[in-house]
Length: 168
Picture 1: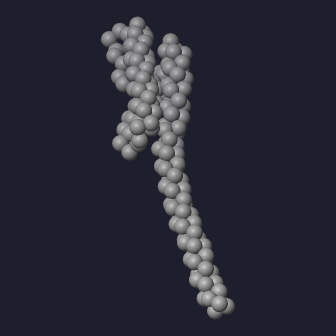
Picture 2 (picture 1 turned 180 degrees about the vertical axis):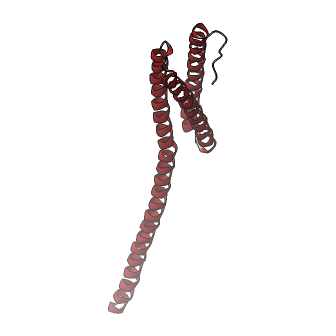
C-alpha cells in the first residue's frame, strides 16, 4: 500500500508540474503577443505623428508667408505715391515671391494629405478629407487675395503711369 502512495505522488506531482508549465507557457505566449501588439500601436503612433508634423510646419509656413504678403502690400501702398521706385519694386517682388511659396506649400500639403488618405483607416480618412477641404479653401482664398491685390496694383499703376501693366 505504501508503494502505491509513492507511485501516485510522482504522477500527481508530474501532473501539477505539467499544468503549471502549460500555464507559464501560455503566459509567455500572451506576453509575446502583447509586446507585438504594443509595437504595432507604437509604430502607428509614429506614422501618424510623422504625417501630421509636416502639416503643422506647412501651415506655419503658409501663415508666415501670408503675413509677409500683407506687410509687402502695405509697403506697396506706402511707396506707390512716392518717387522711391526701388522700394516699391522690392515690395512687389517680395509680395509675389511669398505668393509662390504659399502656392508651393499648399500643393505640398495637398499631396501629403492625399498620400495619407491612401494608407489611412476610415476614421482617419474622414479627418483627412476635412483637412483636404480646408486646404482647398485656403488655396481659393489665397488666389482671390492675390487677384484683388493684382487688380489694386494695376489700378494704382495705371492711374500713376497710364499704359503700364503690372507684371507678376
